[in-house]
Amino acid sequence: MRYYETMMILKSSLDHEGTEGVITNFKGLIQKLGGKVIDEERWGRRKLAYPIKHQESGIYTILYFTGEGDLVKELDRVMKITDEVTRYRIVKRDDLLKKSLMRGE
Image (cartoon, rainbow, N blue to C red):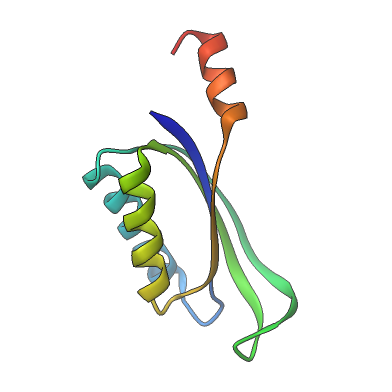
């Protein structure tokens, strides 16, 4: 099992319910594919460094999760085709693995 982090920038035009729906769908997808969501951070609406697709701001969310390579491939595929996602990045987090091993998880 590997540890991952994904940061998503969602369209700023989403309301609270729309944002919750998108995040819940991705968390459900991770669980459906055998992963486990460990934590999430919601940074809220922030100004972008530069306009992306004519947007000046976006809704930032970070999900920390465990899973295998196939999960990451599918998550990447779904994020690419989801209209509400402006940008995203999925990275492997070895430092989270070290912390969990030190705690005995």
